[in-house]
Image (tube, rainbow, N blue to C red; front, side, top):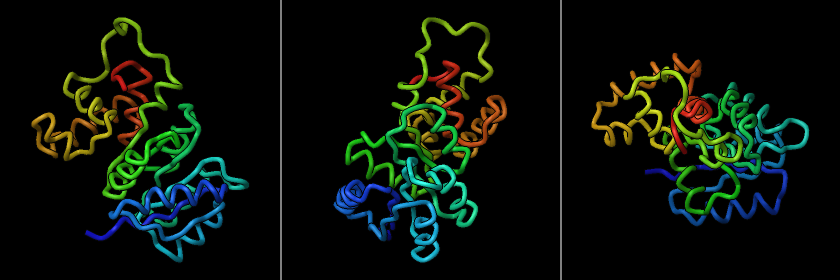
Length: 211
């Protein structure tokens, strides 16, 4: 299987080089370039066509959210994994709405970072559970009123919160991938979202799932 070709975007050169060393230690990952700004990332993406872009949010000028939006519109087949120190929900939601496939905190371990890169490059979705823990109040006691999701939809969303893709959810819940996708679509509609990661954030915020 070909290595995941990663473009790292971070305006702190020391941080970018440290990330490159961590990721390059994984034989399944290849670092193809380092970008220091949004425009630089867009230019290198056009030239290098990486498998995945690892994007910081706090970039000068064009921030990481805007850069993600532009990159996803120009190269919709190239996923973006946001890696940031911002653990507030609002940043995660903005990044996901811009088209990011994942949102991970820079405090993640080297193993978790490499696993996240491989998962997102393979088409998965990822939300660092510490984002919700830091930004959202934990539900206390029973949530008043009926849940908008069915029992099975809640189970599926809980698996999404745990970072599992459709194939893994299918195996864990003993459902066909088609059935899992149908439950996800129904949950999206009820929660008013469009992606697995947005559904996870909203389910955590409303107390329908736990990180």
